[in-house]
Every structure is written in structure tokens, then in C-alpha cells.
Image 1 (cartoon, helix red, strand yellow):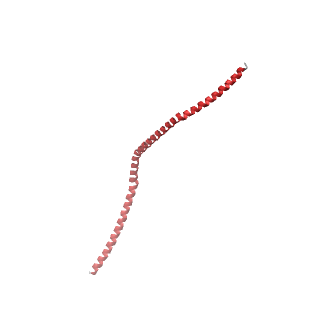
Image 2: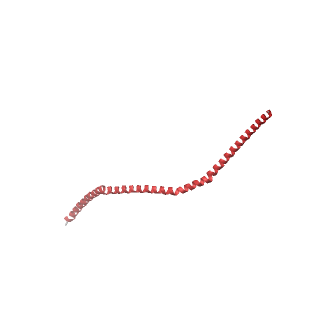
Image 3: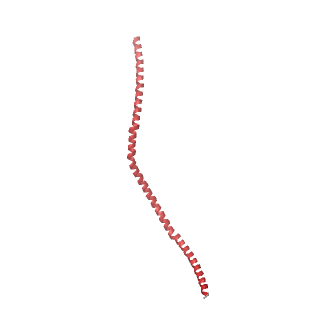
Length: 129
């Protein structure tokens, strides 16, 4: 009867030791299997998903650029027309008008001066005759 508890304790220790060794060995095998099988598949899946994501981002960027260009084009054209007809054209017209007025004044003054000199020369010539 005394032998039973000692036998039981010895068996328990032996079983615990065996279970610990078996557990460690199984964990090592499981880790090895995960490294050899699961991780490469996971890495391949992530790489594939990232490549697909990049392609879809490129497609979205391209589509967004096209949409923005077609949506903004009429706005830009209308804005340019409005600015040109409301600001640039009137300013150009005023500057051109002023330039032609100055040109006319200078030309008229030159003609008047020339006419007066010719008139003086004609007067002198007629007086000499």
C-alpha cells in the first residue's frame, strides 16, 4: 500500500517529463511547419494583394484625373472667357485708345509744325518774287 503512492508519484513525474518533451517537440515541429508552409503562402497572398491594390490605385488615379480634367475643362474655359472679356479686353482697349490718341496728337502737332514751316517758306518765297 505504501508502494502505491511512490509508484504513482514516479509515474506522474515520468508522464509529466514525457509530456513536456513531447509538447516541446510538437511545438518545434509546428513552428517549423508554420515557417515552411503557412508563412510563404501568407507572404505570397499579401504580396499579391498589395500588387492588386497598387493596380487599383493606378486605375483610380487615372480615372480621377480624367474625371477632373473633363469636369474642370468647361470651368477653366468659362473662367478664362470671363476674365478675358471682363478684365483683359477692356484694359487692352483703353491702352490702345490712349496710344492712338497720343499718336494722333503727336502726328497732328508734327503736321501743324510742318505746315507752319512750309507756310513761312512759301511766304518768304512769295515775298522774294
